[in-house]
Amino acid sequence: MKPKLQRTFTPTPGDLERRWYVVDADGVPLGRLASEVAKLLRGTHKPTFAPHVDGGDFVVVVNAAKVVVTGTKETDKVYYRHSGYPGGLRAEPLARVRARHPERLVESAVRGMLPKNKLGRRMFKKLKVYAGPEHPHAAQAPEPLDLRIRKVGS
Image 1 (cartoon, rainbow, N blue to C red):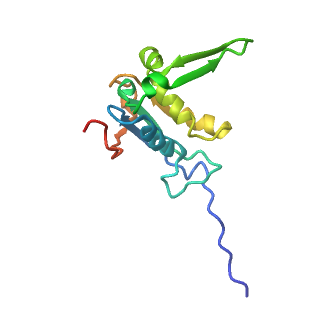
Image 2: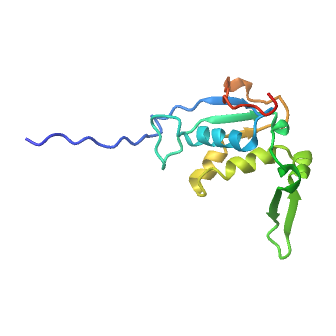
Image 3: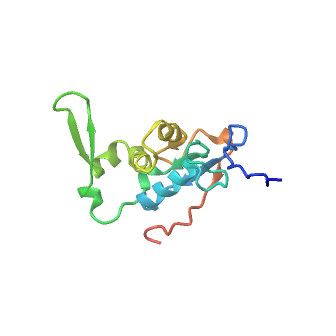
């Protein structure tokens, strides 16, 4: 009699339980914040993680305008975007992006840490970023998440 083989567990949509988290970005280094948020969006913190399934949680980031960058990144780091037309490359330093669209700092950092395919785009849609302390997702009862990251200046 042959022993029964163990099958690899693959989560189905019924197995997934999505939670909502709210993260305060005030005084937190940008890269450390982005890596923790990407981990939550991908679902790698769950025992049911599978790389081919979007099993992550929703994340609301508040106070994105107060995120910290170290060194000379405030003046030296440049964000590029292209309009799609010839000669349409635009370059903008981090300081100007922070002044005009502070949410883009966090969104760009997190997007770079997610898979570059359909699955990554679906995961990215679960990220909600707000420049100030207010957000419209109170009905989802998001849990405050302490990232236990040493804040700069404390």
